Image 1 (cartoon, helix red, strand yellow):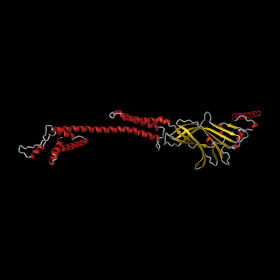
Image 2 (cartoon, rainbow, N blue to C red; image 1 turned 90 degrees about the horizontal axis):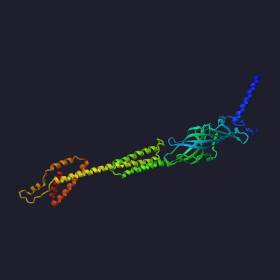
Image 3 (cartoon, rainbow, N blue to C red; image 1 turned 45 degrees about the vertical axis):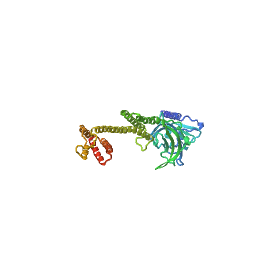
Length: 446
């Protein structure tokens, strides 16, 4: 019996020491003169599943933000990753205690209190930092005000208009809403208006700079009702210097390099072709590199696409211009060579194909004048006439261009002979007709 009584006393002493140790570690020793209650007294009759003023009006929850960093802004996924400190304040009359002090509690005691169900609707991924412990803060003031702060990193969507890329300005948002409590239960507000957001003024980004920001209070409308909503708008302006040095200057130099071929001799085919093909391939690579950080499938044309497209048109046009100029030059040179060859053939046929015409004025052998004229009209065939006809037959086998030039030359030569004989015969109609006949025969010999 005595042993049982001693064992019970030992258990009571041990339990009392344990309670004192727990209170000393988490909440400190309270001075009875300050009338500060223990957590057990505050939690007595507290139901964390019911919001404050459950049978009364909505709970007013004040919000404030500290933007620690914006790590990445992706045009491909159209989102940004930010680390923020979110602070929420509300008043819970069940946690009022006398005095002017505040209680800073361990973050793990959040599970004992009612907290708002705030979430970020545009968040794709988010997590709460937990090194070395969960980055949470609970502070209870004597008037029942509760401060709940936490550090989170979230990837938030941002709809971007890339029409003027890279000279664009993007307006991104950070929205805070209540998941389950509608406007009849909770009301959100910014604690200090635009001053509730800190950190954006001193933020330094790689490709952007923050131009301005402002806050607004609105309502989120869903099928289940109206919910409180807070929105932070911030405008980002892209720094264009990187793109000037990376894209615009090289593409401009490539266009100028393609124009260098205009000062190279047209007969230097390898040099001009090498410059043209090299600039076209380099420009293609530059265009592909400029689109690596952009969405692959988009329904709008960007400013950089227009500029690079114009540069590519100039470069490809320079290559195409040389191809056309070289083709036309070769065609013109071929025509000139054909004309020279035909001119040479005509000169040879004019010197060997016919003899000078002789008119007899004294018919001593009893021949009449008509017989003499007929004899005069018949040219004497020289020994090289057969060779001339052979050349004429070979020339008929030339290309269509050569045949056209040949016909034109024959007509001109025929008209010249007709005028010459017309002057020589003194304008006689019969003589003109005979001269035309002789001209035709001479052309056939030529």
